[in-house]
Length: 160
Image 1 (cartoon, one colour):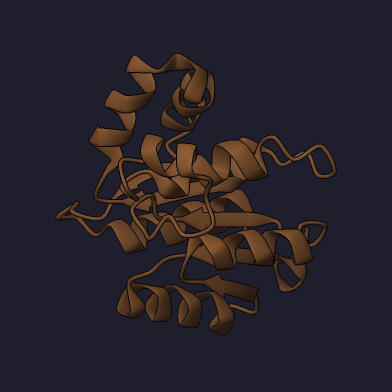
Image 2 (tube, helix red, strand yellow):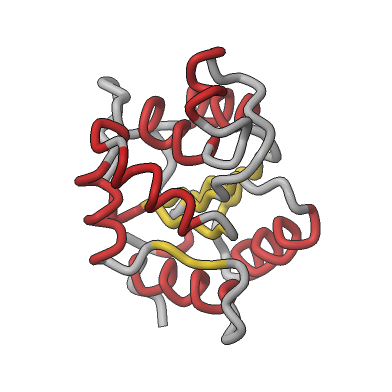
């Protein structure tokens, strides 16, 4: 894939981080679709799923757009990004999306790991695969999680 053709969907509700990621990827020639809520993420996914090559998402954001049951499961938003990935992206019958193309950047990765290990039906295999492929990035990483996720996306798209 030519990096100039790649489309990245970023689902992030922190304005500074969203701007930083969007600016970097656009400067590199990517098309970026940015969303600040689960509701927007669903809309962007539905309207662009055939074009999206990479998804970069937070887990903790407003759960608006999820069902009442999903909101409860998401711990009132702490895991709403994961619920969106699991229920709407990975289970989309019209677009099979490779898990290796999903990157999670969040402060809530330990909470996500505990939740999934206690509720295996909520994506235990998927999360283990993401951990093994090093697709989970902790925002609190003192070595710079933003730089790490940018490098991982570039590597996935084979960009030097």
